[in-house]
Image (cartoon, rainbow, N blue to C red; front, side, top):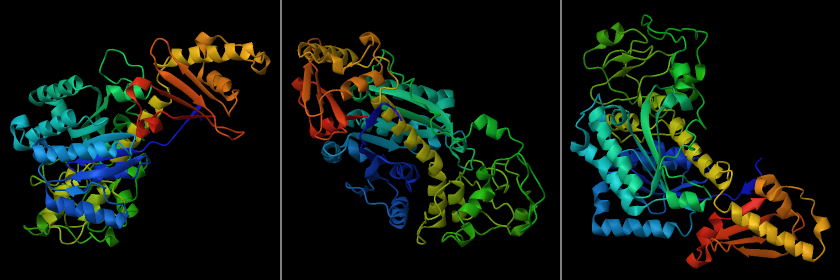
Length: 490
């Protein structure tokens, strides 16, 4: 338990390129987040999004589901409406974030590779433009590793980061692998996260001149190290035998295997269990491919006791069931994407759209891990865990000195046994000091240097808690700002 008990934060999310909502689901199921607006241009994907959440009993976003092309939000009417929704949401939410993974074929080595000149590539630029115009408190941008590693695309990625920095964002990026978060899949994606400088300072973080967030802990919620787990002695290829039993080999991680997730999600009895493509060329080809032979561009047969390669079911990429003479079903593909077993795609969706939206999505376990990493970072910033001397540290010290003088004047110094050097005041010392104040009193201190106001106010209860507030009176203070800057102290 840290010294400072924080109030719960309410964080509103505006989602773009939502697809079936795998990334969104990670945030929706993480305490503190609520989806407020969802945009997805392809209506069948939006149909999946809406239907699945009814089954999952997740409430609808207050600003609704939208199927406009994202470019519409750069035009007057839609742009003003989006800005109004963001402004309105800030009355009830402490922070507002944008999340989205623009379509990535134009940056994919295995895709079109047209980069920013491609139609999908341009959408990435539009998403960044929306962030710059609307100034959410933070954002998440997800894309394929080709954007990060391919020289011709990396130039665009560097330009994106520069634009965001010039618009006031502090950034952190990492090439993550979904398997690190517990998804049964070797899937690398670049994630770029940014926070507004003003939000970080409002939360109490002292920033240096660099716009790179070195304190963002990407490893906070990972379960496995990709390098170590991928180098385990996994089974390779074995002769295909229909419906045969194969014991699990030793030395592997069962929870990362295809079979574990098939069993976990009860795929044989899942409503999408019969949704798979029928073979066009007969069974001979299907039966000739060994279990675990996933080295080809297409017709990859999964191994039951190994993780899956990247779940990409477009561009003629076919993934075969480990021990059945067919392609994998939609239920099995959902399991490989680590979705909850009650995530169901409605029957009227075509097979092509089913597999396309599944393959496009961020694995749920990775999405949830990212959401938890973001919320943990915010909590640590609020809790001052990154800073030895926060921005308002000197003001608290001066405030403390003032209180001690007042107490000394009233000959009540014997009530305090501080015995510490004020210049080396620790958080626990500060808490001890404040808790010795009369809980029924309100203490104000205005720093002569910053003109910032610190108020310590008690509650009419013998056990506390006592609250600290800080703001600049000249700037005024909204209700949401008050909530944002309230700390509970033990």
